[in-house]
Amino acid sequence: MLSVIVITENEERNIERCLDSVRWASEIIVVDAFSRDRTVEICTRFGAKVIQHAWCGYAAQKQFALDHAANEWVLSLDADEEITVELRDFIEKILSASGAYDGYEINRQSFFLGSRARYGGWFPDYQLRLFRREKTKIIRRSVHEGFSVEGRVGRAEGVVNHYTYHSIQHYLHKMNEYTSLEVLNKLLRKKRRVLWLDFITHPFSVFVRMFILLRGYHDGFRGFLLAFYSSLYNLLIYAKCWEYQSAQSRGVALPPVTNEELHVLQGLR
Image (cartoon, rainbow, N blue to C red; front, side, top):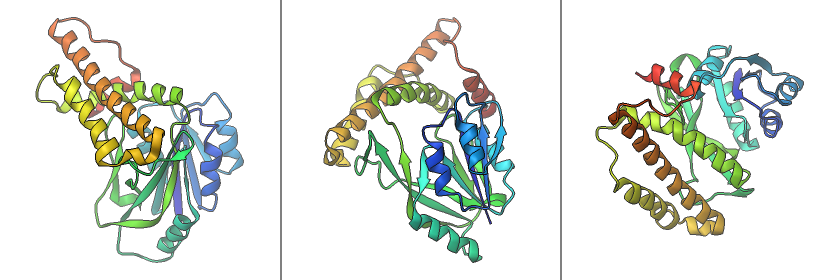
């Protein structure tokens, strides 16, 4: 038997597609951060068990969902993802046999502005998403959290479709959120201060790697945008690190952080 876990907050645009792809699962758990749109209504219609829980960070929210899963096998999905028929067939085979693995990495196919991102490092994109509950723990990071399995890990057949940024405005909004959280990751592990050279070399290397070395140009103008915005993403991380470090060196208060950032700092120390 399979438990599917999903965390949501105002996901009416995506959640129906996600839940429709896993409606065959024996249990669907949605941990919702008090959505103000139709998310809960849609989840209820699909028979999901909805638990409303105040937002406490990506990793902590997914841990809360995992803690409520009742079955041996768990599939973790984001609200903007859906599984394919091939992947469903593979999972059903795993559930009907004991198997030699305790977890499976699943390939993710992302869509950017409505089209597949086939190059630039966006595909293939294997992530550990299917696992035995009792052998799995959350990798606690402020953003881009993951799972770790104590045991053997294999690779699944089929893909997860990921309907990522649907507009430039959406991308820029998430970029600002994610880079602020990435700063926390970097500050907690960084061994030196940010230098002005970092603002040039790191973003430039990101663009060259994605657009040229990983052939992002094959995705046309969308490939260029992905490489360009990824380099800008990197630049923003270093700029925000510099901002934090400069404030500390002057002995002034750090720039305001969100409740989620404070929670992450407390949890990672």
